[in-house]
Length: 219
Length: 99
Image (cartoon, rainbow over all chains, first blue to last red; front, side, top):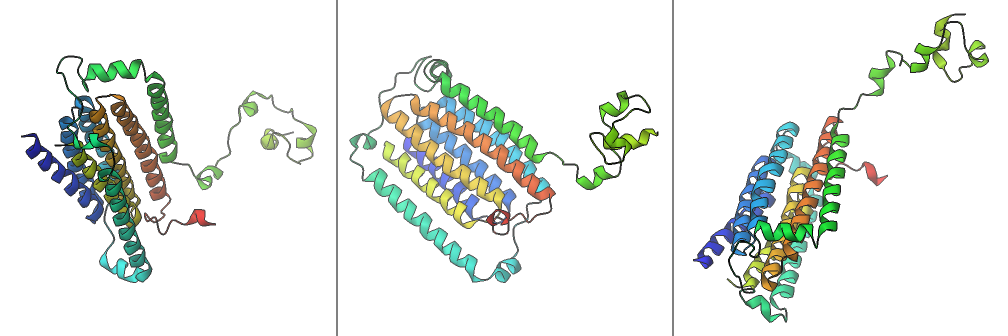
């Protein structure tokens, strides 16, 4: 039973990954990644990582993918047309071939490293598993680890998330260009507070100074 | 299934993600392929965690997910900023940093 489920999920995982790499339209690539993530969650369940599987489905396949879909819809997710590819010439096809060779070499190397390893335990079925409310991989188990042994990693990850959220807002905000600002004069708080007829010598001779708008207030 | 099968799947997913990062030109798809690579790493972490019966790998997988969420946040912010400046959405044509 678990073998059948493993093969179904593994086929889903690999098909989704191939779809992300191959599909031209970014919107379909995002959908292929959703298939990949949900199949991966099934694999996590088979490995007794219940909490991580739930987080994967809710956070990754839910929230993060919605973010992707919004950005694809905003930017306009059409892929490049055939004409563009032809105009671009042969240098990119060489790069593409180089990328394919690199990916294949990486796969062969990883498989040699993983399957030719001297660790006998990789051919086993894993450590023993005792079901129960505090069993391996349950939310209680993960929460216990996160708040005791890995408290520092937990806090650092949350801080990183905060920095990432602020950085995303700063990067994507709408900037007011210099042209829109130059039409009207900026109002400084000192100009409002200063009584009429006062000013510095530098302003009186017209050479600017600290408050360049001083000439507005008359003599 | 033995742990080696899961490790093989994770290696295939990682290599596919690397292939996509090398060959695709749309930065959105490059980000998606980075997610694939991180997921391949996550699967290997959880498989090893199951192999030893130890929860550390699962914690590390959750931290990797957090890092991936941050990366998506920053990357999508950059893509939106690039789009607002009417620059081409293409990693080959964005060569301002080349000097």
